[in-house]
Image 1: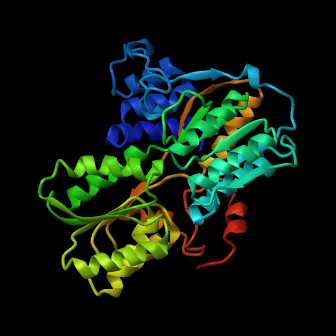
Image 2: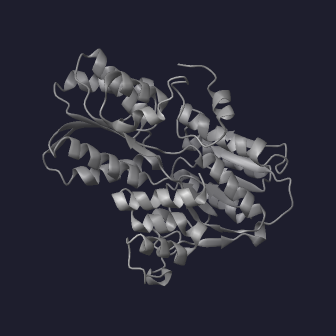
Amino acid sequence: MSEHDFINSLLEKVERGQLSRRSFILATGGIAGLAGAYSLLGGAGLVSPTATAEAATVKQAGKIRPEEWERMLFFDCTPFKKDPPWKLANLSQGPTNSWALMLDGHSEYAYKEKYKGMFSDRYLYADGQLNAAVQVAAVETLLAQKPDVMISTPLGAALKRPLERVWDAGIPVIQMQMPYLTDKFLCYVNADNALQGRVTAEWLAKKLNGKGKIVMASGAAGVDTAEVRLTAARAVFAKYPNIEILAHGYHNWSISQGKKGFEAWLAAHPRIDGVWSDSAFQSWPAVEAFVEAGRDIPPMPTEPLNGFLKLAKKYNLEFISVGYPNATGLIMVDVAVSALRGEVVPRYVYVDQLMFEEDELDKYLRPDMSDDLWVDYRYPQSWAMKQFPKKG
């Protein structure tokens, strides 16, 4: 997607109420500049055209989450500038499911192909096994190998001190989770998890006409992605006193664990009018559990995972899909390259999220490709086929 198309897609989301004006400014400030971002909103009639970047009060990094900054912050990477080849470290959450596998795949594509020859042959990869304690130990191992830059997916607050030590060692840290507040990082690259939680909960509440019994399924406890989405969704449901939350559980973004959770909920609750799920790894087994129990499948949010989309087609489901792009793995490497070239980089990069409902299903469904494919990938299709070579 070109920068022009990217900006226009975000403007459309602001117009539809799917993206706040502040998020738009943060997302586009690194492309158009702050004044340019305000001008774009003004030209679309979304703010007064006389508004300027100076109208916002600066709040320091480390005091509030990057998504809540009122102005884009930048970092001059001249101190990090050095000649290639560079040594890249990746503190990964680990390929514990297909989404995480594609996250790593996007980073590997950038390292091996997009920036071929610019990185050292020593790719310092650490598999976090979806476990913060494993990651804490891995940071020390990576740091001892003296990388030039580190991309990371910290899984909990325990990573605060270890990653701050990396920064203090003069190594730029780029991360896609922010489970703690700190100013010791170069750039935070992520989609908006609060937006995902809010949009999906509002969609479900409207589908239920503001009343009914629901269950809520989250990923991994304590992980930023799950907790931010859950908090945002609960805030929405709190506005609907006639929506009863029957149960909530953490299923670790595992289809098998999700299946067991929904089977237990179906056995315990004879009436479930809706499902709020923070991921396709919960909505997919939810559908299977409802079908096997002989129950009507209620409306539910999901993500653009091909296996769920196939079920949606088969059972004519009502859903909203809000993406969480694993292309973040690629974009983190983009930022790493900019840093090592000594460029000025934004300290927050918003990764645009694909949103669609059942009326656009055929546009995104890939019936000829693997169930495990996340259809909002941004590396070449050859890499998608490499990671998921078989149908089903």
